[in-house]
Image (cartoon, rainbow, N blue to C red; front, top):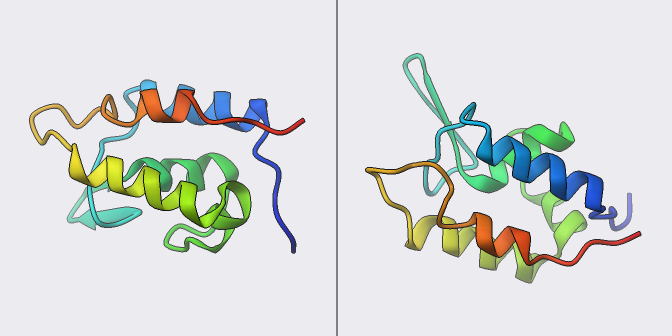
Length: 101
């Protein structure tokens, strides 16, 4: 499969999921499970929204590009606030992403 299209619909679903309160932010893993607690980095939430395999970056890179995935991953991890794991540190960056038609 070639490059996937990052459409406005996908972007809006991703942002809605991040803002929903359904997911709790983590760092360094797309998805982390510890006991009964499951947390997601913002890209792990995108995997869920797009129904991609949980712990793989391949489809994310096809959807966004390697440099964009790297930038988002860095923002998620470097400015993470453990007292407020609500994606507020990455939502502005995601809102600025260009979409395809």
